[in-house]
Length: 473
Image (cartoon, rainbow, N blue to C red; front, side, top):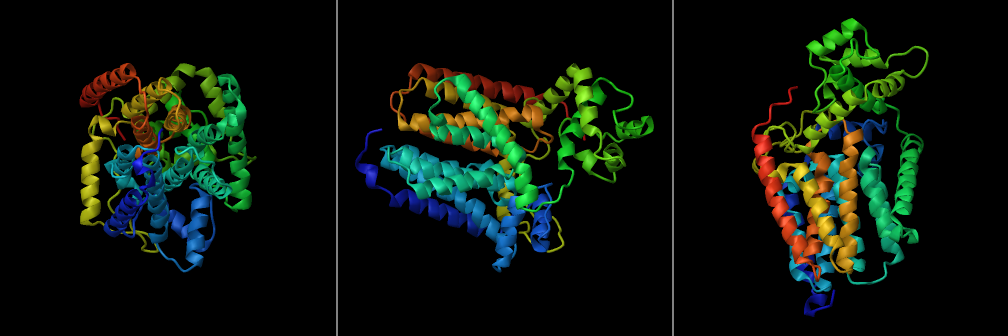
């Protein structure tokens, strides 16, 4: 992109980003703590961690506590501060690269209702978005203006991405392709060589996460690793059907079916001890060593592949909101902090109520369907591929790849369908759209196809969700 008279206009976008951040802090301080975060705060207070939720986040919180910063405010500063910093740096980069309109559009992304709704909730997904957007904006500050990235910026980007990848088990499917693409795939040109590198990097990160969480961070094992096989076994047993579900007695499985312990929306009924917890305990109990749930899981998948496929597709439908009711559970963020031992977190206010209402209204449109965003991401990637090579194109394509691969991972490893799990899909796709808008020579044919297909996809989403039966809980 050619430099223009706006190339020195740093102050306006940074000032606007700062004002928007201050407005968010003023309206939503000290932040709403979700249920998971209240448990993490208790771990930070006691300095005793487990791996059910990311130990790195609880550890960071404990550092703030040791510095005398109590409550949820410090974590809100982290996620919202990083978020607006990243968007501000991206806006500056686009201004300097001669695309001021795209720079202002980058700041508007920060005001999207699903983003603001969740970014003011203390949660690992909001922390992940803050860290990743900050890394994106920092690198864009140099890449979009064809400047070399200084060593200190590289260190900060590595720290931010390292934090992001430890926040969620499947975030590696977003962070690994993003990092490798930013690193130029270490000179590899062929797609299959890049695929091998990506697989190796993903395996390395997954393998290292355990020693980091349990060794370096000192987190106890909570049994979180059993949630996926438990969920899949219940889905297979329901569809095969199996009597009983592997690992359960016939009586326990009959009770689990009566209590509707399986739903394609999430595995949570097994986490509700009053409802289905005893069945989960029975499956995971073994006096002679580790529970045999993994063995039962693999055997069931091999013996009943169609039932497994039906179960995973049903869950993918739920999490992508393809054919589910528009008022499906877990769309909007909580408007207040649940009661907790330390009485931390913000209560319900006019701001949180209003944002929740706006977000729920948006979520009932195609804009609230991750499936629609997924198709948009693919179409934007296709359009970027047909665009002449330039910094904005080179920077947008990794964001699309990252969004697509992380969303694809939900087809295999997901156990719940909260809309917050797709915040990176929303964010990366919106950022890629802004970058596409700043490009020169965008092929009009591809752009028109993208717009036409998206119009049809939005209409189809409305039709499918209007006639969708409830999933049941």
